[in-house]
Length: 323
Image (cartoon, rainbow, N blue to C red; front, side, top):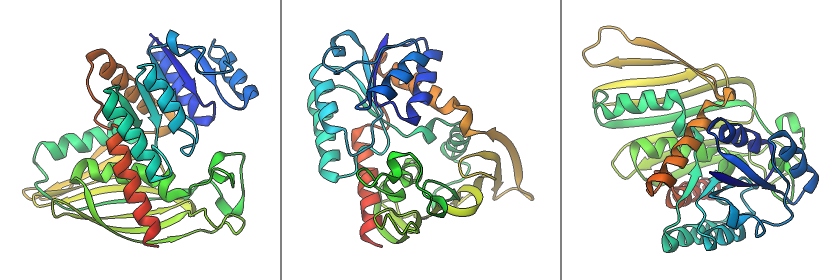
């Protein structure tokens, strides 16, 4: 099978590595920066293409990895060609764009998957298996606490679309999409949002990089998100407080998990389980692409489809509105 990669930024390396490991040919790479496309193509024995139309008929899928504000037209072209699409999260920056992508996917029946990579991590699956076993009972409180030095740290603007004034969308849309999807995948739809949001990069007033969020879920649970890209200390914590027990994933990096702590009603002491889930090793990208390939082959709709992506964006926008 063959894929067309649209967007040759940093995240493209992770997806290209995963595709190569899965035996998927990278038939072409397109980017508005032709030099960047050529460099990526050379690394993965592919070719840089001048337009996506010239290669769409020859591929089996599309990996859409552009900044999130530049996607609707690419989705239209891929769907017109009946090519399944993996879209890097967040699905879009504007709600109207997310709705347009969702409508295109629903009308066409072409699989569109939003790449919420955290769902495909070993630590996430371990926690999900524990929750689905019923051992934790019903969720009372679910939370995400993730802090560290991210884009714009100490006011430094790196060569990244995240801090490009023409493309910037801020942490609440770009990165909190992971946390929102994580929480909703356990506790169901979020129905109420309260938030305080703050940016620390004076030259980019629209760039938020700190958020404190309170959430209410349709099933009655409450939740919270604390996140920062301007913390000098790194830490990562996700957890569930249930009616029968509590569980907590933690790690000493903004992305990594090293252990799962669990204590059930009947336990005298908590259990500490080593998970050693290091995000930079890239296994989650392999697993999500493996799942996407299975969805194509089995003609099934991905669990994190365009509708899920739109719901996540709705929460991000509510966070920014609540600031």
